Length: 251
Ligand SMILES: [Zn+2]
Image (cartoon, rainbow, N blue to C red; front, side, top):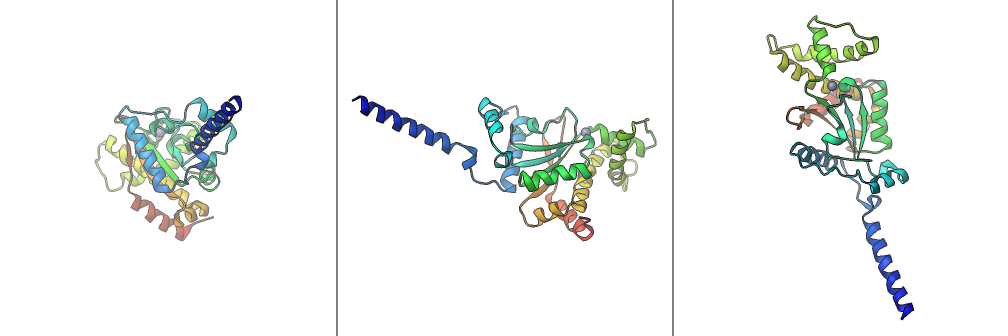
């Protein structure tokens, strides 16, 4: 009888172990770009509607993070502004080991950011990059003020960031004479997202090849501080920037 009890106990533990293993992320199917994008879109809708799940923030996930390679978990790379009002994990209702985040004021894309993005796509193997701007961006506002001749004195490093955003402001202002300043700022914020994507494609052969081979997708987006919703920018424009950059790509 005692032997039988032990056998039953072993069988029960084995069954529990089987179910625990079945739940391990290591066993989940690989995610593609569209599936990853759907996860981010769904997460933002939950967040914006006050239904956030706060996934992957519990002790079990933290224990997994200590033991496992993020490559088996992270599904998106995000380039975003450093602004504390736009924390990517929170606005996408994601958690630990979900998003490989690159943050810099004004979500600009220069050498170091490109290197981090290449790492996120080619080594962490996330199938999706989102370049995320946001409404009322201070860095883009500073670039717009500089463009309008109302520049403040800035530290050299800050000035360098603002100068990187100026081409986007100039592009937004072209063909919009007399536009309201707040609308012009919104246009400049979108143009700044496109400018970052263009710089990325122009300077990274690795990213161009990953996107051309459909192993990765690049998407532009803007977060609205008032509605908490992400506006997803047209994917066709990403394709045109990719083709344009391919002809003049540097590395
Ligand atoms: Zn910003």
